[in-house]
Image (cartoon, rainbow, N blue to C red; front, side, top):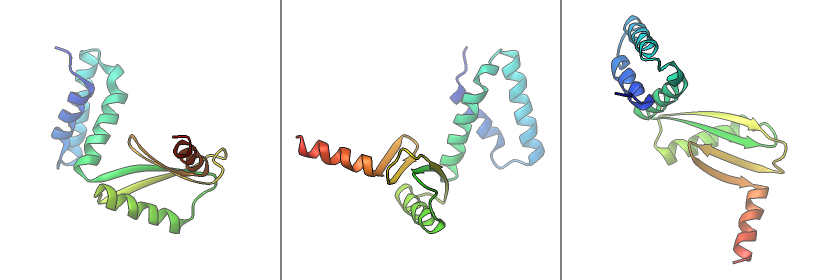
Length: 133
């Protein structure tokens, strides 16, 4: 029977939840041995991604990314974090501010698969769509 990366990740989460460091180490080593035995080591990256998703969901953590032309100030980053906390009912928000000089102005916020485009180009594209309908 083939085990999916999601199944491995859920099992690993269950085995490590509320455990001591030594118990967590033991569970991870056990998983590594199983992956090697079943020749499933190619799944390690997917398992890690799925585990992170499960961890974040269970602990009400949201990871987001902002993309802007220039580095955003702490004040604005804190406002964005507050917005994301409220929108996604998160206890904690980790925000990564990426710089992309192709953005003429404004900001793009990504949370998972959701994209909130408040860039100048995004706004012009929206306006064009509205005007051409």
